[in-house]
Image (cartoon, rainbow, N blue to C red; front, top):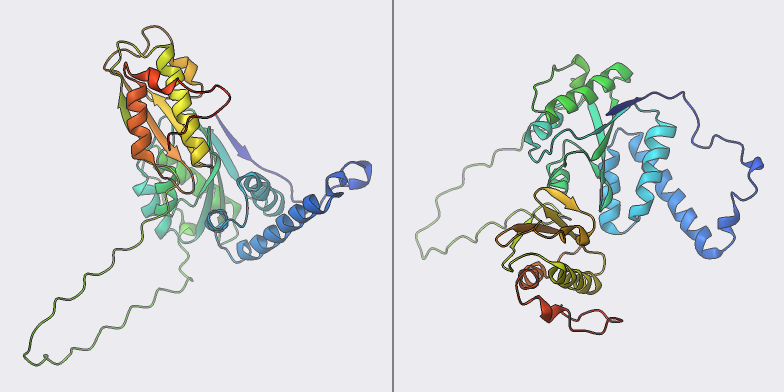
Length: 334
């Protein structure tokens, strides 16, 4: 299922607010007023950057990482800038297949400097994740686009032609499905300045003989910030993954998320995202030797190895150790 968006031009501030007396009621306290004010300041700064042909996903992800904005602001910012103000063409689509390899997309859009895309991935657990398709680090954070999940791609072109932007969206979806798209003329901006080559170092004179010291090893480049871990496996060693195992897992995950506030444990079985752990308790659904996968999402991810150890125990016949606690308190495991 897909949808192409076309809208008439309008102002960010369009609309007659006089007919809605409750519109400003949320601004009646200092706290709420300051929140809205900070939001407006953030949007104003982003508009200035986007007007210089910079990518919205790059800026928003940086602001999220720095704590300058919150997750719940992302949708509103995307809508007011890309939809209301810029009127960009877009196409929404539910993934037909899961995709975890994005190198062709990164390679192509890194070269196509005449177009800029912003992808919004509606993750069922983490909410809206933003990706600049030319950024390898952004894809490393997403890791996988799963089947049936929703993505929306917005595009703009340096030549100002809507047709070029629409072709860039089509090219993106072709690359996503493993096809080789046609490269439209506007995809590459030949007027953009070429990167200056680094000056070659002049040859140095041979050093005088003497005791040689080992050169210090070059520091490894910093890895891209990842807010989702890889998937880890937990094998069921109990005769069945029954109701006791489910309750043990609930308590373990609750304990982890209470200790590491902001982190979220995501569970999968046979490639399916498990929204409710109770769905794993169907007699015989997960048998002895079956594998359940999990990953952790969050800004500062810690304690995953201990979490995996406890989940292994919770999937075994020793699950009862995680059920002996005050029902009004969280287990203190981490």
